[in-house]
Amino acid sequence: MADMATLWEVGLPLVGAAGGLGYAKVRAPRVFWSLVGLPVARVRFATTYHSTMDVCGLTVQPSRLRAFMVRNVARRPDVQPVPPKVRRVRGTSTGLRVTLRLPAGLEPADVMAASARLRHAWGVHSVNVIETKPGFVELRMTGYDVLRRVRMPRRTSGGLLRVPVALREDGTAFVRDYFKVPHALTLGANQTGKSMYQRNLVAGLARLPVALVGIDCKRGVEHRGYAPRLSALATTPEEADGLLDALVGEMEERFDLLSDHGVADIWALPEDVCPAPIVVLVDEVAELFLTATKKDEERRDRMVTQLIRLGQLARAAGIFLEVCGQRFGSDLGKGATALRAQLTGRVVHRVNDKQTAEMGVGDIAPDAVVTVLAIPPDRPGTAVAGDTSGGWSRIRTPHLTAAEAAAICAAHAHLTPDLPGLAAYRPAVPGSLGIAPDFVPLAKPSPATS
Image (cartoon, rainbow, N blue to C red):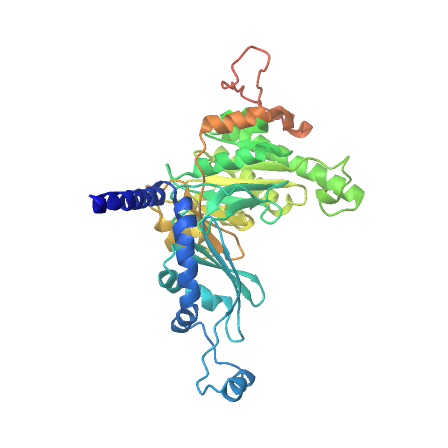
């Protein structure tokens, strides 16, 4: 009986602890990683680092001075190859960060090429290699699939025109920075999370002192809920034609202001005369290219030309483009590739054809096309994000409903700047008619007269 009592006293807590860890591994992976995964990974890394680097081909022959010191001072006849020197090891709630100093003869591309082998050797979910400065790289290891259940980091570097939108596969936040990447193209088929990405972007921008302009040629079904926070909205190709003309006119007025003050962009203007930045949200760009008659072709050419002008010149005037679409290809018509060339940032969700993936990221990172085509349909919100520097990574946006995004826009309606040049396209939102806050009627704006 005493043995049975001892067994119960010892066994029950062990079974309970094992069950709790198993539950945490599935339902709370951050907790499991912090309690079990991180200590195991650090021990495995410390004990196998040199041998792993050697078998992965990430070592170099020692210098003559080092070889001389080993043979004559340390009295060791065999001189071991030299791996990258570990400068810092830091654990996080999602993985492990290791800073390495590369020896002469190795470059960051060598470590990137061996990232899959390092992942398997150390038993982590993924290894991403980031070059921090010349001669130094950071290994960002994740202990589990952080994109399975997206939880944005508590601390993200936001600010004016810097919006955390999604989570990268290395556990860091994907920040839409308009100062670094002024214009962007977002692609994705139906039910891929493209609208979710746009909701998170609009919700972040709505909290900032910027003007939002919507072009939604699907009769405003996507942008209708954002009306309290929009400075202008076009819901048909005809209205989009007039609104783009008005935006180009606004850009030219701002250039006159810059010329008068002798500065290169609006950020150098005095605060009392600096106009508000404008973010133009184009929901379905293909609707601007499609034509049925000769008159439609003339309008199409005019709209595409204005979009290209905004992409080429508007950054200095504080006007930025966010172009979205289900499909994008050269067969859309004249000006499609010229417009794409002005869109530095690229976010591509799952698409229905290879050409769209190639138009999205093929020109900046050809190896990312395979990743785009491999996005599973049961992972909405997963995308490949890159820019014209050639770097890219997988991201996934957190879930945000249309009602939540509309509520955020309504709560920050007081931040909507007044732009006289776009006043004809300002969506009317009656606020004194006793209408419930979650019901936002939208009157059709009348186009500006020519």
